[in-house]
Length: 617
Image (cartoon, rainbow, N blue to C red):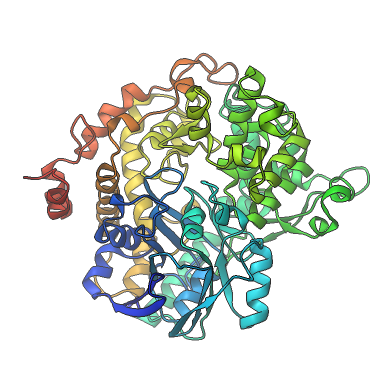
């Protein structure tokens, strides 16, 4: 089988929890996670509703490989209309929560409405109920997780929001397993707007698979292939922050709000910096960490140097917590010009505790710092904090104020860079696409990534396409559109299976099809997965078109298009997006307005969906 064939519908208006059956054909078409959640949002016409309204559905979805013995098979995703962007949002997370949901017998949880008072959802295998959460409101996620484990049992897994989600911070995320996050696009703000503090799950069952013996053989084969991969070894030893030194040396590390492309403090916040011992024997990195069924272990456990911040903010942050990944090190370090690894690690811990996306927080703070240095905002707007690039104390003050929703600085930053910059009449300082802050790859140095940012359904994202190898090999814009298009389709499928994208250091779609064909009913090949991925990506495009996005939103900040890279390998270069985009549209079978053609909709089986929003007569 591969699926349970049922989802839990939680109606917060009526405070009811009911089971809904899903046909096997429906699940085979949309797979899980990203695909399943997108389809459910489409059926509920989520594009019609404000992201923070009760009518906007919130979906927690696992995949057919979630909870199985497949390497990294612990992923789940949160899908909704994003509070930060207004576009379709799909935020993927690891840890153990997704597996617990599957062990409890559910493929997804669909949440509608808004509770009058704070509640949390309690799922105990096949039973579900809504419980008062007034005592949890106002607590951090770390506190909430501890309380719910004390209340329901220490075997439960918890996903929920911190105070940022309650306060409506537009880039609030949903946390689980203390430091894993469904991190991007403001899904935590949507959860907070529903007065839903957390979901606690106890799952004691198992995951049904189509052919257990054949799956065991496929798992053994793919485990061996992953174990032998140099990419896996590098992720295990150095984590994702191994990219820091590479992007900096390549001239593709956005620095000081992307005014530069190399950072002089890069080595201090790199993977090597995390591992380096100081004269006192202290080092930032304590250990690595793995999610459910993971044989990679790219997660970092870190701590800050004693007495560095503890005198002011409390000794509890000395205890090892989730450490810096590449994206958090970039956003909390290079993007704001801070090379103090203790400050960056502390800020990352606060993002985890309060439930905020560090990429968007760092990008928003960077925009505010540029505005501060231009004289557009001053001490009155920042509460006296000196928002200049490189100020580690300002980073710490800003992350605390934003996570707690404290005026004036926290409320200044809470809406994200695009809204902040537009409100102050300086839209040019917002390094965003579709309202979402860029990750740590400068489009002037990495041309394919720039095209990927511009056309990503959820706004600027480094995980919706995979042009990395090409970008480090050549800057030729002509080769980028087919790579971006193909890997976007593949990513849409991979993001729907329930496994981590990092298995692609060793596996291709043939390996994943081998696993799916054993785990799930039906015939699964690489081409099947690619075709389903294209359908999912196309439906996401239809959703965004229905929500009011147009071809004009497939763009990059003017800085990348007009201001040449000042340093590095690609000094003097700007993004070639205007050259790449028409070729990309043609490959996608979109018209010059970025709309899927009737021929494409016919081929991917979405004619009715196109007709629904006026693309097909």
